[in-house]
Amino acid sequence: MAVEKQTDASAGRRAARRAFVALAVFLAVILAVYLLQPDNFDRWITAFHVIAVIAWMAGLFYMPRLFVYHTDAAIGSQQSETFKVMEQRLLKVIMNPAMMITWVLGLYLAWNLFGFQGGWLHAKIALVVLLTLAHMHQSRAVRQFAADGPRRSARYWRMMNEIPTVLMMLIVILVIVKPF
Image 1 (cartoon, rainbow, N blue to C red):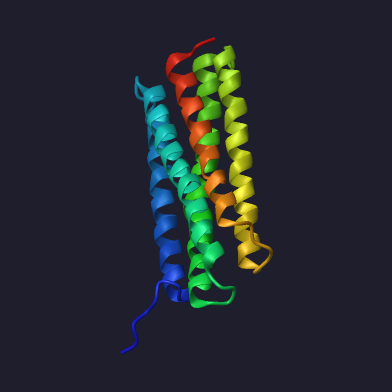
Image 2 (tube, helix red, strand yellow):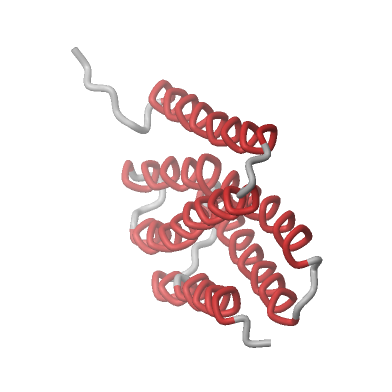
């Protein structure tokens, strides 16, 4: 009996199905809260926003680490092919949905709770735009690795790993402290 590898197509389809079900359940819970409109509705939306942010940040922190190791793998090797699968799944199953949910719920909160007012909020949104650009940069790198295109150095990806960290720290400070 052959052992199925997680890089096999059938394992990928099962992982995609599980991720789709989890995302559908999460969206159904958000919809249920929206339809029920509890007194603390905005707190529920804030909680869902924070959950999405955590998932997005986890992906933004992990993806450059995968790139560091992928850079060292020989093109065409089994290790390189495994990294391609890992990067694709991380991007499509976790990072992209989490980013979209973060944006939708974040814009709702900015509008509903703050009326898009406040210098701290404008600065936060600008930093989230930069975080989105970092996401897009990582997404482009996933496509380049998948095509066995030119690779940046492991050192480059180690440095790029710091950008989401710094942006996240600044965003958290703005949200909690609201300095201006």
